[in-house]
Amino acid sequence: MNHSASPSAPPRRTRRIVLAGLAILGLASVAFAVRRPLMMSAPRCMAGRWHGCFDTFNGVLLMMLVALPLAALVAWALARRRRAAGVTSAWRMSLAEVGMVYGTVPFVWMTMMPGPGAGIVPGRVSLIPLGDLVTMGPVGIGGNLLIFAALGFFAPIRFAALASVPRILALGAGCSALVETAQYVLRLDRVSSVDDVLVNAAGAVLATLASRHWWRMTEEVPSGQSGPAPAPAD
Image 1: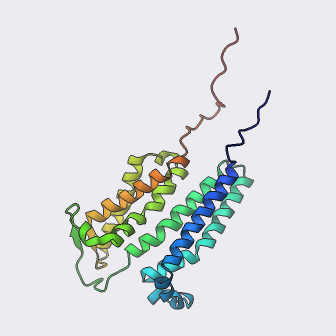
Image 2 (image 1 turned 30 degrees about the vertical axis):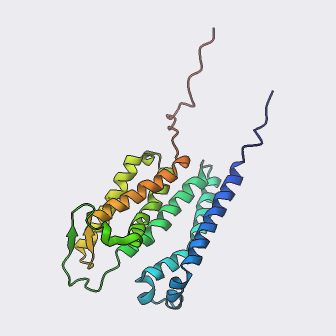
Image 3 (image 1 turned 90 degrees about the vertical axis):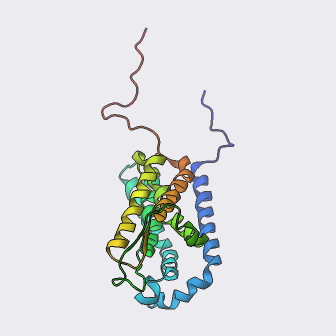
């Protein structure tokens, strides 16, 4: 006798709608809270000017919000194409891929913005752990936590091989070290600090812990084997 699913368990579609609604509400709340500084860059961004838009934090954040519908459209198109091809977990894969790019590239862009002495001031390095945290301040620490947060959140969802806290820690630290090295080599008038690497990696780990419920932990079934062998008949 077949039993229907428990009515107390919400369907997957409902959970997705609720999560999407919460995400949109969160982004709208953030946009409302920072609307004044963002709107300072709006005229130059809408005019397509580089200076005052793409070379400022406010301008990059504004364009990130403006590009949100485009990112959603790209995720929808990828998911639809994969579903037509019969790919399982099409939405999971597409959302994770777009989320990694959309949530990481703008923050990395901001860390690579040159200072006023770029090309003139020699590269500076700070290798004393926890020595720069005091000078970062709450805003600096929060920003460093966000740089690779999207990567830490979505990478384990998209790639089963990365569904591990130590691996995400290594990935976040490695990506951050590359950014800090680029800042030094390109002489961007920025301090390449070991504390930036530590906080960036910590942000990736915190984000990956937040997405742990959606990790794809199931092992791949070997090709040519549909499942465990049936037990021999008596």
